[in-house]
Image 1 (tube, helix red, strand yellow):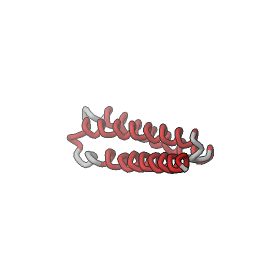
Image 2 (image 1 turned 30 degrees about the vertical axis):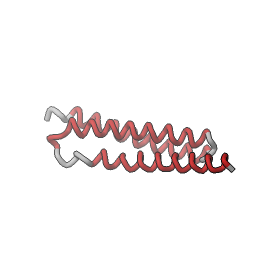
Image 3 (image 1 turned 135 degrees about the horizontal axis):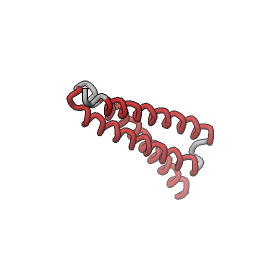
Image 4 (image 1 turned 60 degrees about the vertical axis):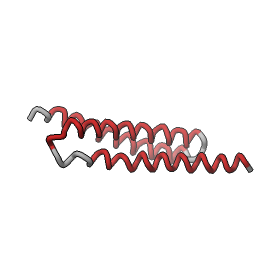
Length: 101
């Protein structure tokens, strides 16, 4: 009985962690986008978003290793997170090259 309760708690904590990490991605991304004078601050928040993507990767890896999700679900989420990471890196690179405009 204790094992089952602990198992359910681990699933709940993993889901909560992934949820809050994914919620922080768009918030960090749009927070300072409107004001171009704040590019460096925006780049900082994009880097924080990249950190959130890495947190998600850790969470889904743990979930897969604990058999909370299937290999197929893991691969799908990993692919999407990799794509998000590439997009964030591209935006950071673009903003850095256009900072001197």
